[in-house]
Image 1 (cartoon, rainbow, N blue to C red):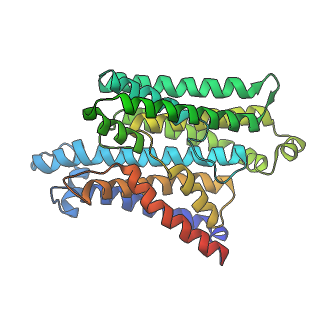
Image 2 (cartoon, helix red, strand yellow; image 1 turned 90 degrees about the vertical axis):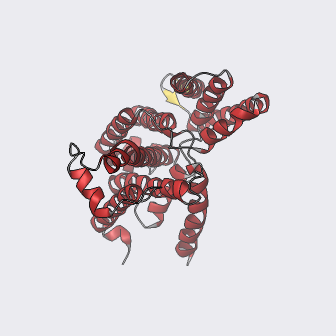
Image 3 (cartoon, rainbow, N blue to C red; image 1 turned 180 degrees about the vertical axis):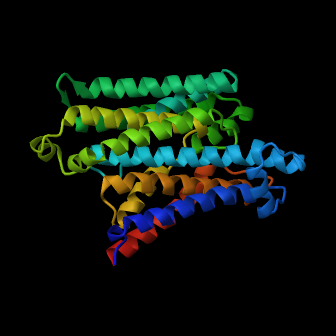
Amino acid sequence: MTAAKYPLLLLTLFCLLAFGGLFTGLLFGSVDIAAGRIVQVLLSPNDRNDSVAHQIIWQLRLPRVLAAFACGGLLALAGTLLQVLLRNPLADPYILGVSGGAAVGALLAMLLGWGLMLTNVASLAGALTAIAIVFGLSYRIGDWNLYRLLLTGVVLSAGSTALTTLILTLAPASDVKGMLFWLMGDVSRAEGLLPAWLALILAAGVSMLFSGSLNVLSLGQMKAKTLGVAVLPLQMGIYFFASLATVAALMLAGAVGFVGLIVPHAVRLLGVNDVRWLLPLAILLGGGFLTLADTLARTMWAPQQLPVGVLTALLGVPTLLLLLSKKRS
C-alpha cells in the first residue's frame, strides 16, 4: 500500500496536520492559555470579558501563525512550480535569484536607516529587479531557454551574495543582528498578511486550473508540444506565479530557507507525482511545517526568539534524509 494510491486520505491527514500546527501556535507562548479558552476566544471575537487572552490571541498569536502558514504555503507552492518548470526536484524558490535581489534591497535600506515600510519597498524593488533581469536575459522572442534561465539565476544569486556580504561588513554592529534575522527568515515582524494570503489563493487557484497541463509538461517539452500544450505561455505563467509566491513570502518573513526545497520533494517521496494532488498537499505541508517551526523558534529558548529559518533547516535536513533512506530501502 502506497500513499499515492490514496491521495484523498493523504490530503485529509495533511489538513489535520495544518490545523494542528495552527492550533499549536495559538496554544504555546509566554502566557499560558487553556485550549478551551482559546476556542472560546476564537468563536467570540467581540467578547472581551478576558481582555488579556483576547488581545494575546487576536493581536499577537493569530496574526503570527497565519503569517507563518501563508509563508510556508507560498514557498512550497513556488518550489513545486519551479521543480515542474525546470524538471529538477532540487529546484527551490530562491534558485533564480529572487531572494538575492530582495536581500540586497532590504539590507541596503537597513544600512541607510530606513523604516520597516521603506525596507519592504526596497526589498520588493530588489526582487522585481532580479525577476526582470533573469527573464530579460533568458527570453528570446518565440523561445525561452530554461538552461539560460537557470544559469542566469545562479549567477545573479552569486552576485547578490557578494553584495549582501559587503553590506554586512559595512553595517554598524547594532544593525547586523536585524539583517541576519531577515536573511535567515523571521516571522515576528510579519506585516502585510492580507496581500500574502491573496497571493497564495491566487497562485494556488490558477496553478490548480492548469494542473493537467503541468502534468504533461513534467514529461518534457517535446512531448507536451506533441500533445497540444502551449508550452511557452505555460512556462511563462509558471515563472510568473512562482515569482509572485516567492516575492510575497519574502515580503512577509524574509528569506526563510529550505521549505520550498524539502516540502515538494517530501511529498513526491511519499509517492505523489500528480500535480493535481501535489500542489495542495505541498501547500498544506509547507504551511503546517513552517507554523510548527516558528512555534518552536519562539518558545524553545523563551524569551529569546530564534530566526525561524534556523529551525526549518534543523528540522528539514534530518526529515529529508530519513525520507530518502526509506525511499532507498
